[in-house]
Length: 369
Image 1: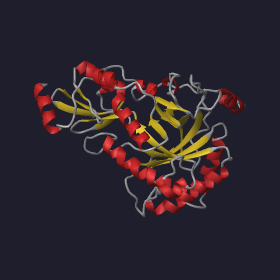
Image 2: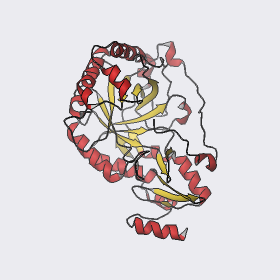
Image 3: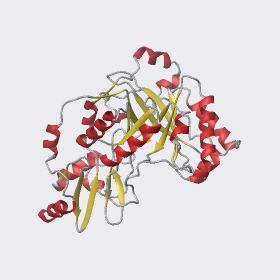
Image 4: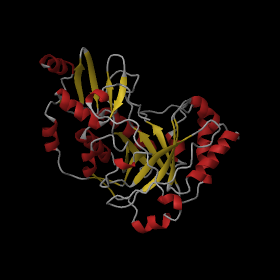
């Protein structure tokens, strides 16, 4: 262990090494204000919401695109009652499988595109808005993607909020399908997914380092109007070993650190190092301190809105340090709760629950999405 600590100091001389408790005690009890605070909620994980979170908006991650362009199913709106009010709920439409299906559903005047547009409008009936999360749009399909968003905006009723989740960038490219300027002219909100700086197939490193986030925020704010820009923060971490990588929840990291008596190296980009037999592993993650540092960074840059991927993955203590004034009142919600499907709630069991350290280290966790 002493040799490991010396190695860490040699490799990372810039990190500060106080205990987790001492860092937590030094955090000022200040509330960091934002106009909107969005949280992503997976269908089946509704119990992850404890009621005290400061969310103004929920992105309900529940619908996927099928091969014919229709959606996986029509999902009833979950009833979410937070102590501070009722958040708006947005249905998230995702296509994460690859460029082939994305190409088919975006092709202009195609049957699959028409199917998808009509399905989205139908699925959005009980929700306050729709979010599009297509992560494999090729540069050759830039025009199709922009026209798709424009058509969708026109087809949605006026009160619906159209949001689009976009990958993080630090500069522009003429061939980039995710044109911040063009898309922000259409959408009501733009969520910048400021995470996956290092990912499953990259070398080890922070999921979203403070320095990288600063550059992403600087560029995003220079293009996207402040009232539309939402900076996304990760609540998950990532573990690397010599041959594999997996995503991890903060609670797994905390349990692991306790069981293995492993030192957590605290800084704006915290990580821990431990060994299983002869195998050396490193986990980069975010805790209350590092998340607070990013939030304060965004406020200094006059960014008004933030989002978190995803509810249940990070330190619950962070919610006490956030505030939003975007919560809608109960009367507004009661008017929206006219359909029977609004009251229905789908209950799903988590397929995988980490019950001990050995299962936490199985290396078979799912990826971020």
